[in-house]
Length: 117
Image 1 (tube, rainbow, N blue to C red):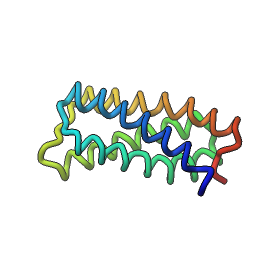
Image 2 (cartoon, rainbow, N blue to C red):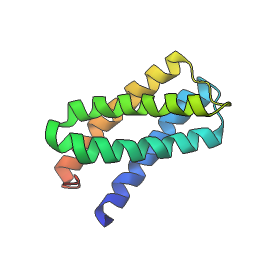
Image 3 (cartoon, rainbow, N blue to C red):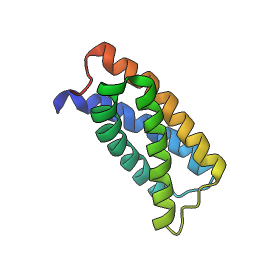
């Protein structure tokens, strides 16, 4: 678990920045919701995308999966949070930016040997 701390921190910071861009500036979400969404997105993307999908399929498919999982997490937050109302555009941008970041991040994980196996 120790080798996973730095990659998870980098992943969370990037996801938080992406969430701020998409849901604070584009959809006027609250800081609390954005923080919680970024934590949930990182956990889901790490547990499913990095641990399960990435070792089996490779970076491109895992990154696409992470983008979709990010959008699903945002939609679930929208269902259960009365103050979080993302627009369709903010959801699309969120999914694309997460997927692009994850694609590059997966390449980094593989090259540095930090990929969870």
